[in-house]
Every structure is written in structure tokens, then in C-alpha cells.
Image (tube, rainbow, N blue to C red):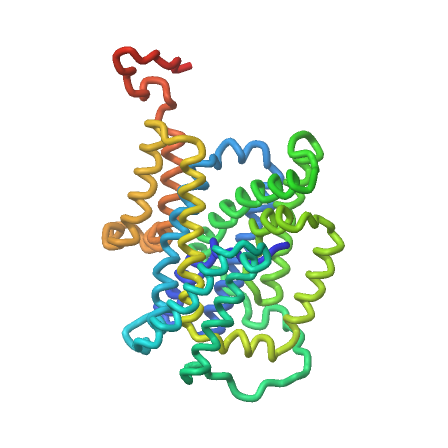
Length: 374
């Protein structure tokens, strides 16, 4: 099962904000996002084509740094939603905190449950509970009358606008999500009793990365955002023991049917932003934790510590002090103003340039056997 990963959210928001600063209206902003999604989807197609070579460049250290930066950069989005919206005009009210805390508490309570289905549905239960509290307090406002007739999407309804900076940003995120897809397919294969090594496994992984690119192009044509294979597939297969493709096809058809019903969209738009913020704050934090765990799995050697420190420092540096890039041309300034892009590129360059463990290991303590540097 695929969907729009949170990994894309930070870049999409940054691209949209930049377009608005230039005076773009809503259709132009959306057209810019769709255009970047369409062209950027060529990245996973290229990775699938040269899969074996790319794996040597995008290491677990690079992926861990990028995922950590993605999660931490999104925390601000969750907090803005809890505050009622971004900007000085955002409505500020103690009720916002009540709604966010209620939602977050319900999600945590469900996650601590012994019932697997309750844990799986924790986000849904938390959103419903937050909306009920909002309804009782009068904060839940539904939109006006909505047509009950099915609504078919109009391809490229907002047009296409191509921005090289936006394309580069999304292409880099596509690279990261492609690496995530490799791990997801490997995990689901393991729990589905399929081989994870050999030609068959390699073809399965390449097919999944191709699917990320092709489905993202299809999504862009239907005015939606990039798709990637969801990591939750591993947990669902592990918990349920169900790995049938027929189940996936059935659910896919069901989701397409629901997407064509305007009342469903209106219902989702009615969810108060503090309720969404309470849920997404935890989810974004979990993304950062996922990156930290990935960094810790391989051990923090001296070389790896330097790479991670340099990459996180550069990524957070441009986020906290964007004026440091003032001397760059505008195009480069916009590209490297993203903590994800700057941190990720720094990690790749650092992995390629900083020497390996030879000569970087700490000296053995007295009485401690020395480790071979070979």
C-alpha cells in the first residue's frame, strides 16, 4: 500500500511558502507543487534503473540523518497546528491546548493497550476523540452544503508550473523515500516468507521503486502529491499474518471509491487544526526517533559521529540562521535553505570525503586488547 509520506510534507510546505512570498495565487502554488512532484518522480525511476550502484552512495548514515531532519523540521508544523495555525493572525485560545492534549492522550493510551487492533487504530481513535471534544465545545465547524454526487478528478486542474528549486528539493526527498522503500520491501518479504536475497528479491525491490515513481506521476496528473511505499505495511503484515495481494487490491478499490465522494472530503476538512496538531506532533516525533534509531543501529564510531554531527549541524544551522546563506545566489539560497537538503547533501559529501575507521579509532586502554583497523 502506498500513500503520501510525511517525508515530503516539509519540502512541499517550504515550496508553497516560497511561491506565496513571490505573490503566487492558490492555483499557481498548487501548479508548482504538482509540477515538482511530476518531474521529481524521475528520481526513483533512475534509482531503480541503477539500483546496485546507488546503494553504495546512499548509505544508512545518510538516510538516518535525512529522516531525523525530516521529523524534527516537521515538529514546527505540528506546533503551529496546535496554536491554531501559522502566523500572527492564528487564533489563540486555551481550548486549542485542550483539544491537542486530549487527542495526544487518547493516542498514547491506545498505544499502551494490549489489544493489537486498538494500537493500530490509535491515530483514528485519537482524532475522533478530539473531534468529539471540539463538537461539545463548539469548535467543530462543518463546511456549507456539499454535493452527494460522486466527483471525478480533472487531470492537471491547476495547470503545471516548473520551478527548478522546487524540483531539486522534491527529487532529493524522492531519493530518501526510495531508500525507505528498499527497507519496507525487505521487511514485508521477510514476514511474508519470501526470500530477501538473490535475483528474485532484487527484482521485487526494483519493481517497488519503479512503482513509487510511476504512481507518483499518476498522482501528480490527478492533482495529488508523491506516493511511496508505507513502512506501516511491515507492522500490518506482522500483526495480522495477512500478506495477500487480493486484500491489497480490495482495499485500494475501496479507497478510490471513498476519494470520489465529496462528503468524505468535507468531513476531513472539518477536523480542527489543534486536533490534527496533537496527532501529528507525535507522528513527526516518531519520524525523528526512527532516524535516530537508524543511526544507532550501526554503532556510533568516530567517523560516523563526525559525519552525523557535521550533517545535523549544517541542517539545523540553515534552519535557525538562514541569513548565513545571504551571500549565495538566490537559486542556491533557496535550495540550501531547506535543512533536509543541506543536511542530506552534507552527509553524502562527508561520507565520501572523511576517511574510514583506519586511523580514527580511539587508542586502546591499558589492558584492553587492541582492535584491528583492517
